[in-house]
Structure formats: C-alpha cells, structure tokens
Image (tube, rainbow, N blue to C red; front, side, top):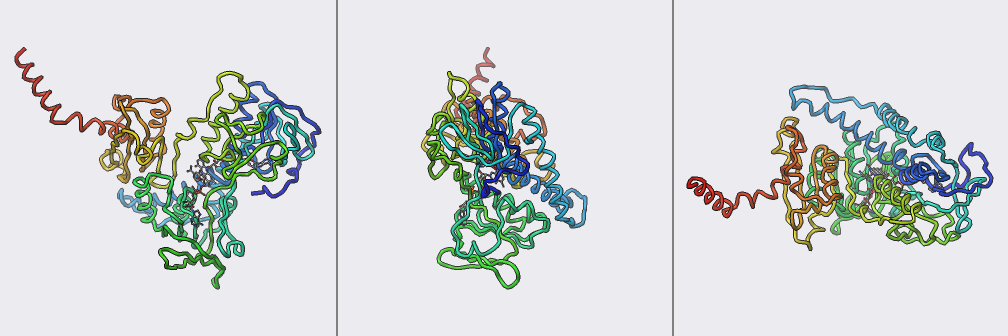
Length: 491
Ligand SMILES: Cc1cc2nc3c(=O)[nH]c(=O)nc-3n(C[C@H](O)[C@H](O)[C@H](O)COP(=O)(O)OP(=O)(O)OC[C@H]3O[C@@H](n4cnc5c(N)ncnc54)[C@H](O)[C@@H]3O)c2cc1C
Ligand SMILES: NC(=O)c1ccc[n+]([C@@H]2O[C@H](COP(=O)([O-])OP(=O)(O)OC[C@H]3O[C@@H](n4cnc5c(N)ncnc54)[C@H](O)[C@@H]3O)[C@@H](O)[C@H]2O)c1
C-alpha cells in the first residue's frame, strides 16, 4: 500500500485552515459510511484519504477477490457442464482479459466511493496523508483541520511474517495480486485463511498450479465441521493444501522461481513455484498518524476503543479494521452507524455489541457462512444442534450441487443462538439466520415460514424442523396421539 509516503496526493489543492464538525481519516468502507452519515445529518464533514478512494475493499480486497472468484467459477462451470449433458471444451483462460474483467468491476463500483460523489453530498474531501499535531488538530498536505470530532478509519495492511529469506525474494500481497496480467504458473500461498483459500481456488480454476502452506488448520477461525467440506472441495479442484506446516525458509531457485521450505512433525519438505502470495493476517494502520500528539492509545490489535468505539481522546473515535475487532466491510459499516449516532446524539448511546455476532462468509465454492455462536462456542450453554444436508434438497439435486449442510445452534426455549452453512449460496442463505440472531427469534419463526419450492432456503427450514423431529416423533408423542385417536372415536 502507498502508506509509506506522506506527500499530498497528486493534484490535491492547498486548502489552508478548515474548521469542521467531523473529520474522518480514511475513505474505505468505514470512513465513507461515517462521512455519508454525518454529512446527511447536516454536519460539516471533512474526509481525508492518502491513497485510493474506496480503501481496501474496493481496490485490493472484497471487490477484486470476488470478481476473480467469479472468473474462476465461469471456467469451472464449463469444465463441469458435462454433468448436464452439455459437453464443452476445456476453457481457454486469457489472464489479461480476466484482469480487465476485475478492473472493470472495480471501475463500475468506484463512482459510489468517488471524490465527486462525496463532494456532491457536501463533504470536503482532501487527498493527502493525515497526521495529528494536537488533540483537536491535524494536518493533511497543506491543510490544517480543527474539528469537534475525529474518526479514525485508516484500516489495516497485510502482515509480513518473519521468515528467513522472505525479504530477499519478490512476493505478492493482496495489494499487488490483482495487478497481475499474466497467470502465475505455480502460485504458492503462505496462509490458509479466507484470503489464502479464496485466492487458491480462484487461481486454480483459472489454470494455475496452487499450493497453500498453512501453519495451523485452514480457516482455523471457523467451525471445523464446515471447514472439512471446503477442504475437500478445494483439494478436489487440485489445490495442494499443506497444514500444520511451519515455513522456515524462502529463496530464489535456479528456474527463475522460488522454493519454500517448511517443517511438519520434525520433517522438512519443499515446494517450488513461480509466485508467492503472503496472506497471514493484518496489521492495523496506526503509524505515522501522530496518535501520541492526539493522546490516542494503541495496543497490538489497533486503536484502543471503549464499548462505544471512543478512543482515549474523547473527541476521537475509531471504526473498521483499525478498531481491532472483526475485519469485515459490513462490520466497518456497522461501526460507522454506531459512531455517527454516538458522536452526534447526546442521549441513547449505542454499544458495539452486535459486531462480535456479525455474520461472515468465505466465498469459496462451496461457500462457508457463519452467524452467532458456533457449536464449540456454545459448549458451556444448554443447547442442541440441528442439521440438514444439501443432498436431501430437491433444488440442490436438480442443479447437481449436493455438497454441504446447514447446522443450527439452538438454546433454551428454541432461541436461535447461531447457524453455520457450507454449500452453494451459503452466503445468501445466512441472511435469514442473521435476522433470527439479531432479532432474537425463536426457531418456530423459521419452521412456520413457507419457503418457496424448490429453493435452497428449504435447507434452512428443514434444519430448523430437524430440531423438533426427535420430540415430534418420540414414543411419548405417539402414545399421546393414539390416546387422542381413541378419544376421538369415543366422542
Ligand atoms: C483480499 C481481501 C478480501 C476481502 N474480502 C472481504 C469480503 O468479501 N467481505 C468483507 O466483509 N470483508 C472483506 N475483506 C475485509 C475488508 O476489505 C476490510 O474489513 C475493510 O476494507 C475495512 O474497512 P476500513 O474502512 O476499516 O479500512 P480500509 O478499507 O482499508 O480503508 C482505510 C483507508 O484509510 C486510508 N488511510 C490510512 N492511513 C491514512 C492516513 N494517515 N491519512 C489518510 N488516509 C489514510 C487508506 O489509504 C485506506 O484507503 C477483505 C480483505 C482483503 C484484504
Ligand atoms: N470473505 C471475506 O469476508 C474475507 C476474505 C478475505 C479476507 N477477509 C478479511 O481479511 C482478514 C485477513 O485475511 P487473511 O486470510 O490474511 O488472515 P487470517 O488471519 O484470517 O488467516 C491467516 C492464516 O495464516 C496462517 N498463518 C499465519 N502465519 C503463518 C505462517 N508464518 N506460515 C503459515 N501460515 C501462517 C494463520 O494460521 C491463518 O490461518 C480476514 O481475517 C478477514 O477479516 C475477509
């Protein structure tokens, strides 16, 4: 990321001194939503961005990664069409055109996040790097901004692990991966988190050889039962996955590529490839912001915030990745809503509680989606788990996507505590369960819903019904029903 420089962005006009109600630093998912909210509520808002409007999500994150996955899926559909009696040749992948497709998607969405749009909403946008010079003042390029409130929305950048030789070889991160116009012959990925797995499958389906080297278990933050389905599918696509492997060395090899050495159970193995992607987590962007001058404290996760997302300086708030919690665009958006409310309304301050229960989706094929408590997290609570498999769903059978299942974690009185789905469109299906968790619905809300036939939504409904099946068809119920039938005959 261009975070290294401190110069104003090209063409940034000098603006002298500005007094504002709200000054937002960073025009990514969190900063844009905050500036939108405060400006629409009539507050004089300044938005400062040192690199690209739209931040990580638009330029090097969610958007290009999903566009690349879509290209991979298109190739895979062609390969699998034979299952439907439609035989297609092995797809030819023109990687330069795939790159154009990804750029095109970014360019289509970019106007939503543009300087023009935000200036049209009445926001003053400054293209420069911001640095606090005092508790209520910062400088950005030639401009000094004084504001009643500041919002830190500076995001995060890729972590770089301490691996011998890594600083001696060219390696990719998410910030340059999407600039490639030639297909990597063999992409080695260090890290089997969501970035590693999504990019592994996308590249494999586009024709690269791919090896993932993961220090622990892939998608280690997710329910292992759901992860098993993703591991199976991504491996079947031809991705080599090496888990519990400690990378000890990376070096250039004689073939113009790289060799990675790793250890597992005291044994060493090597992987040789043409490109290396590092995807081992994120570091908060907290440096070079002059946070000491502002009295804003930090810790290893990012900026220290209280339950209302306020930092140790009462006029400074933090949202999104830099605030240290879950790192997702929708969490940054949720934070923005909270901070706008907490900053501008004196009463009824809202706590940052729902973010910990936010849904997340890994967009592999099959997708893995989770909301609320996992089975492991519910261990100490009185709960039951109900499941339903895709292979029993008529739509999944018709479309030949029988892999996967839904599982629901149900608490006392039928309260929905959480749900996990792995399978086609799991990311869309989890919406229903996100509503159930956020609205504290009982399972009967799902079982009493009429789901259209044939849809994958029925997987959710049948998982909910499965919870009652044991009780409904128990010996006790059968006795009660037969007693009632006898009575029915008598009366
Ligand atoms: C490959 C990848 C795929 C992802 N996919 C998804 C997904 O599918 N779904 C999802 O929900 N999340 C996804 N994420 C996570 C998501 O991108 C982030 O959680 C989100 O972008 C965080 O938003 P933010 O506003 O906190 O930070 P960012 O979007 O990173 O924005 C921060 C902005 O602040 C600017 N900035 C930093 N310092 C300064 C300064 N001193 N002065 C001025 N400007 C500054 C930066 O240039 C940047 O533009 C993905 C991330 C990656 C890397
Ligand atoms: N679909 C999505 O919503 C999506 C997609 C991509 C990224 N993201 C966001 O971006 C964040 C960052 O993604 P990520 O995949 O980089 O991070 P991550 O922290 O989620 O996963 C990193 C993985 O790398 C492994 N690892 C760490 N050091 C290692 C080493 N030296 N050798 C081998 N393996 C090592 C970890 O065990 C972990 O499994 C995610 O946590 C998520 O918040 C979201």
